[in-house]
Image 1 (cartoon, rainbow, N blue to C red):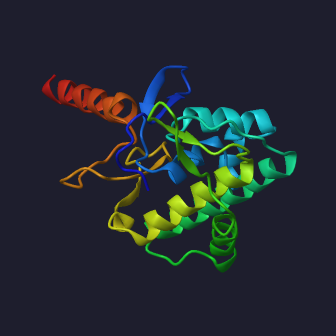
Image 2 (spheres, rainbow, N blue to C red):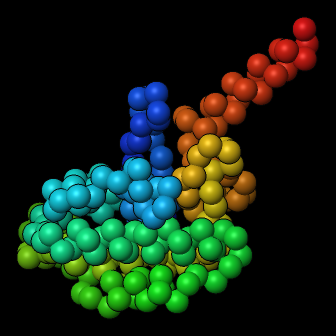
Amino acid sequence: MDASASQGLVLRSHTGAAYRFDPGALCLELLPTGGPGPFSRYEVLYAPADLAEWAERSRVTPTPALEIAEAEVADARRLRDALWRAVLARTRGEAPAHEDLAAVNEAAARPPLVPVLGPDGTRHWAAGATGAHLLSTVARDAIDLFTGPFADRIRTCSAEDCHLVYVDTSRPGRRRWCSMEHCGNRHKVRAHRTRNSAGR
């Protein structure tokens, strides 16, 4: 889990408004690309270019030059769906299903992206990076999250109509919203209207 990265994702609400969402971990950044059951309507991973675009938006920096096969896109969806189920089980205080753990462990068992030091002194990735390397990096991040100090801070946004999941890395541990720009702001507006109505 990379708690130091802060770029997050730029998502769009149903009205089309853009807002920044930082789930606090690389593995959780994969979840908004779709998912099992009701989350399938958000699916965006159809082709290698889609997975490459996600990598570019993710906290994997710098963006690796990836060679992604069609089969690796299916692997990405399988890993993501397993992560969704495992994360939701965790938020309910339940143990993840065996098959979901197996999917995460299978991805993590492959070689991850390999960082290298460039001649200019900056971080790069070893040549020949594939979709499997990317997914291994994501799966290993999930294992770090589930077994690390923030494992009990994996939460779902408090808004009733939002299902985004994040890890609360704030010092007080009282984060309630996926984004203050979006659900946090909507809550403040509703509370303000309720107070005004009560005052009248």
